[in-house]
Image 1 (spheres, rainbow, N blue to C red):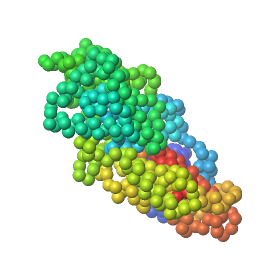
Image 2: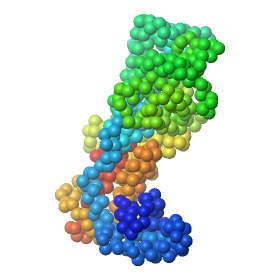
Image 3: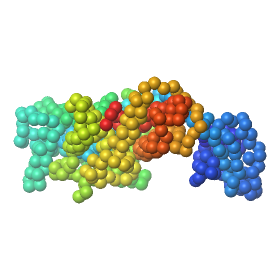
Image 4: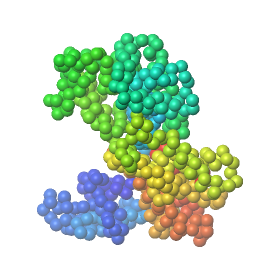
Length: 560
């Protein structure tokens, strides 16, 4: 908002510039916003300080009630704001619960999570799930029609191996307990036996051929039953995490559509038939490795179905944009996918984006679900909830067990989501129980506690009037300065696919609020006007902090 005001003033004196040029001075004594005059000085062959002085003389701040003075210093025009008036405007906007609408109901699909239906989700799946969900929340808030999609790789060799394992060691049995956990034991066993007997894979490949090419009814029935069990297990995990999807895509449903596009690529000489009779995309001349689109036996691959799905999703949903939140391991896959679609002359490819992120690793290295070396997401949630419950019971001994458990779950899931989302997507994460379970410092529970503290103050105050204008103390001003940045942080986060920007911002709010609370008595303020103003400031802090946490998918308990 401050930059907008400065741009208006500069335009009024004939200076055409953008907000990106403006700077925030390193110290408050130099003002709130600074316009550098070095570019103008170069154009006009003048000293930057001379240009700054001329501009200050031409600017009429009396026409802008938010600016108290301007000053030329070191080649900059420094703008000083009337913070009581700025605060009044900011708090009024927050209380009106105004939202930014840049989406204008455009359709955007975020595809994320995508666990393989062969074992439970491990902690590595949490990152893509949380990042995709936060991104969808952000786009929802900005006025887009966001479609949350989950894509199940239900036709690959790994599923065939699980089906083979089930037929060998568990046929006709039903899952005991959570179905994805129950099936995992057979998936691990298959790979243990495979290391001793390579011929086991022949059984899996035969099942894959029967499922995809022959469409054998018995094979389809048992295959679909196992995938369904896995997805049931996933849905239980999603419910615990508060995550919902609008649509589930299954790879096998798009294999034939993908094969049609492979035929088109072959006919248009975008692909060629290899000596082994496989169909290969010819991408080397575009700086990418060639990739197989269809095996020699006629079975497809992941990219085969992905071609079909991408075409169908734009056709069916009339999307304005599609974003894939998928780990960096698939960077090459998406470059190849988008290049093939571009060569096939599908215009929608310009609206396709891959949101890449790094993996979550264990201290000893990469996780391996097939070897049974993985930290499962459900286990993390259970452990976090148990620890959170112990803390909640200490603080709230009179609450019912059900309410205590409800609070503990919100704290546990919030702690997990925040610990993952606060890390830049391009940086890998090493899973650390101590770090994940920490409830101090820059953590989800710390932010939730700041919110409950706001609630507690407002509850004790009972009734108060909304007061937007008061002489500001240092800590009140600092808190308002943080609160006013919500829109900018939100837009930057959406533009750059960086939910961690919102994490950083929420932590700033909590820290600024803590400083305000320690230095500015609220309920024991000097007079009623000051008390009501500070209660208004607490209320607006609660609103912005709650909005920030909701964007991250973190629920706020009423007490902790």
